[in-house]
Length: 172
Image 1 (spheres, helix red, strand yellow):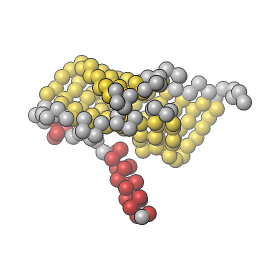
Image 2 (cartoon, one colour):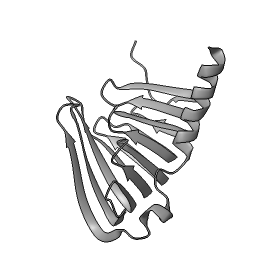
Image 3 (cartoon, one colour):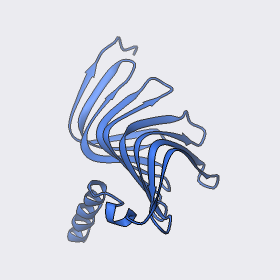
Image 4 (tube, one colour):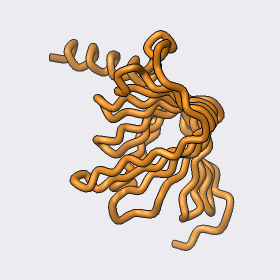
């Protein structure tokens, strides 16, 4: 049983690191510039909007890759969360968006997140990475390796090497 969970855990970590779409998948696809793409899922209560300078679709339109993007996530009954960066891939079948390249995110509540890579799972409503992450808020900074952030529940978990710095006065 322990071996099964260890192997599964290793496979999950590898999924985060590997790109969803490769250039070979997109060779014969369509390229569009300055795209505005909206994905709405009322059943799951999650919507997102992507603006990108360049998008290349696979021939069957189940994958697309994009460059220089701004992604706005709208969790149900929560404040929007925005991300920007250099590259991304979206797989319609899995509902996953793999983001990379100087990722910067921010919320309406004043929180900011910085990383080189993030995976957004639309179906489950979470952000995840195994890379280094820095999060700043109104009165603190947290940095460490690995992140799991449930957007709907606003639950955050960092995996290792976590350092927290309090930058303001705490009211207890």
